[in-house]
Image (cartoon, rainbow over all chains, first blue to last red; front, side, top):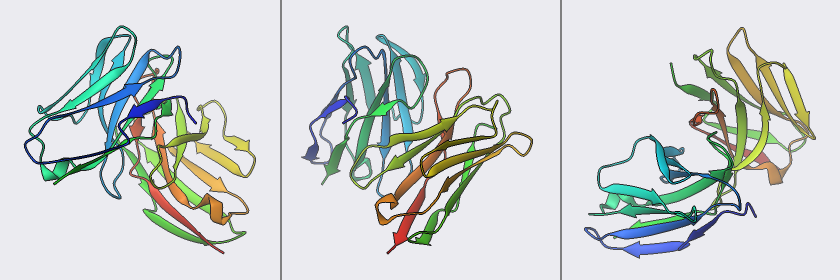
Length: 112
Length: 111
């Protein structure tokens, strides 16, 4: 158990819908990273927040947005969902701005 | 120049054998090179990491070999076991910036 929690574990929704994925970092970690992993694919970095501020953006679509709240938990919002958005979404946390860190168990999103 | 190239894409090794996964990078400013292990349906977990001031780091059956002049680093898994079957990712970063990830290697250990 990495200490990073993600909810929900599974999410099934329809095209065009909007969903919110939630991540609670390890106690004391200020950085949260979001990644997308499609079936049998590598990790695609989406976005990084550090202590509430956006630090870096990767291959994140305009339909996707994220934020980190004062209690350091983070939410990833995915809107106008398409079939191709079906994937595992991971968040990771670390105490500093360095990447990687400790990964949560992921949210499996299925768009039908 | 930001890429990390990982090979092979997949690897099958007999139980007890040595598994070797290679990564190459271009950016000489990279100063942190971790390896992550991911089991199906789980998040990646940090396995072992190295900084460029050493050429080798060993933790149990896992060893990172680092060749600064060739800009390459590799993961060796000695006495490979079926429980090692997983996807392995290499990565690199500089100055504590975000990690640049390799594409992953799916390792299968045959009993």
